[in-house]
Length: 368
Ligand SMILES: *Cc1c(COP(=O)(O)O)cnc(C)c1O
Image 1 (cartoon, rainbow, N blue to C red):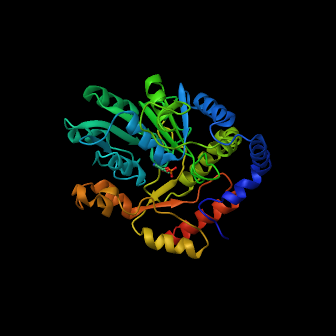
Image 2 (cartoon, rainbow, N blue to C red; image 1 turned 90 degrees about the horizontal axis):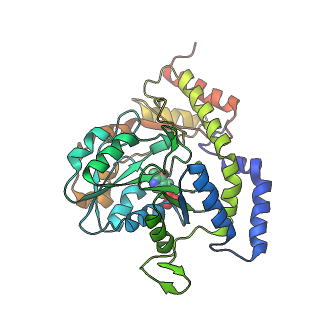
Image 3 (cartoon, rainbow, N blue to C red; image 1 turned 90 degrees about the vertical axis):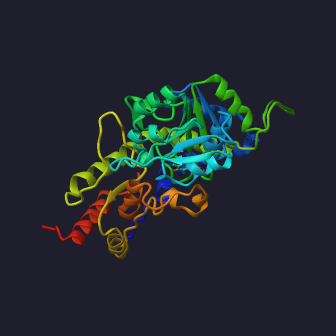
């Protein structure tokens, strides 16, 4: 057996014909940047996510960057976020000249611990970037309440959580701005880079609409300093096709996750299940004491695993200047030493998953 974490080539076999047709249409159209496909995708995805406005951008990192810029966050401001996320979440805060302020996570969900947010708020705090890590919704009601009490903006980093529901609403549309990535391995992946910003506020949308295209709405008329960060027509055409499959693929991930959770009796720390905070399993992560030995054992068996994330952000060299130290965020540090992602994707077969489960049990010595 040879089981990768995700198999994009195998996935392609499921929908390749439709993608090729959609791409050929764009190639023949002569319109490659900000044309009909981008507009159509923006409208369909806004509808899917239940938001008023959506703007395609070049990638998820730019989505976060433009979100901060649209809110006017920069030099002298502080932005609260989690130290247990992909680097880009905090990178963009520093990039606009603001200061990332980390708050530790909940041990079970790996999302920001709402009980620890208020003690990190100062008179410089302007926003919170909430990450719905691995596809699980963060505790949005409590976060929105804290934000409204302290007059903070909320940006949702939903790059790993497209389609996830929180109390019946899709994440990304709950805070002031939602950001998504279409990096190929994300739950809705393009064939290259892509990203999206969503909001329900017209004023924010208009800013973002201009910022992504050199501060311009009308050709050669520039009302602000922006940049070039656009989703291109080919990726939009591909995403329109793949959006049709998204709910089915999420359902498949949930089925696979439920089977892991049911069968891995001996693993104590598995993703929790809440009725109002959905998990769409971009990653299925467990925690074990002997993580590196287990990963090595599974590798020998031909099973790939992943570590998200081996070094929490406050201990990254790039953030040394913030002067955090080991021990500052013990929950994140502990998770980074124990966490392991098992293969989960829309193309994994029952036989493959049973082999993974059997191998896990063999390692733990709990085979019947
Ligand atoms: C993937 C990801 C990003 C960045 O998206 P890109 O499209 O790769 O720039 C940001 N935040 C999180 C949580 C991500 O998983």
